Length: 262
Ligand code: NAD
Image (tube, rainbow, N blue to C red; front, side, top):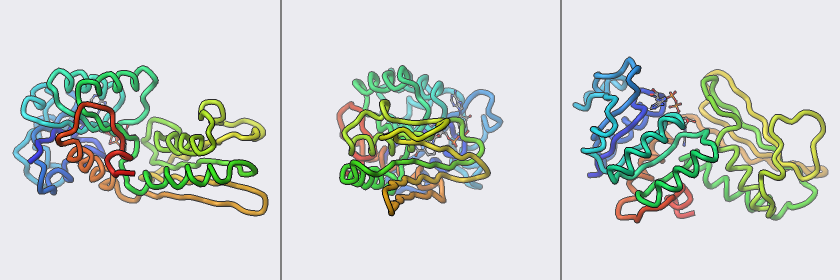
């Protein structure tokens, strides 16, 4: 049994993660953590699911780690960076699903991965990770004469835009074309499309779990690759699969392509 702690335990993803761990035959919930201001503090981690776990939600990360082999973190960048320090100190591995890190944040994750195994992926769904591969191939073959645009839609509460997944789709398309995404990306476009640009558009509203489409538009035809997530449990199951995959792995920075063997 892998003993797993969940941070952001009362968040949208946190609740799904707790459910995924409770339903897994080879994992056990060993800790549930949230910020001191969370109204869920002190409650049983299964309360929101109508289940009893015997694990109370606490704001003591170090305490939760003493009892755990692994931490799954879907919170906010500043929270994840603090949890990263606690995990390296305790020698506990991490799955990081949080999105919206700046360059310093990403460097801190790379550094921590020298000491502990970390799976870091802005999208833990199998389908999206297959879509990255499909796009890379399409962009490579349709190298000229096709304009690439990435469109994503998410619920009204999402704090970052474009989504981490949209950026990774952009990277896959850029890799297929053998260019650096930073040199060709067009975010917040104002005016004409530039030749060779990879464009991004972000839509926010309602309760959309996460839609991503890539359009490769050429003369007289258009290819569209679309992934729609309809259930957040999908990401939670992917995160749990990633945690279990790290058993016996050396410290290092891994992503879902490693976990899925893509
Ligand atoms: P949410 O707002 O519902 O939950 C966030 C949780 O984190 C809350 O419990 C909150 O109390 C906690 N939190 C906030 N700030 C914190 C801090 N500084 N320290 C510790 N905890 C803190 O958000 P959500 O919809 O569950 O999404 C959480 C993150 O996961 C976001 O970054 C989102 O983009 C990302 N996400 C990733 C995937 C993936 O597959 N990788 C899928 C869905 C969401």
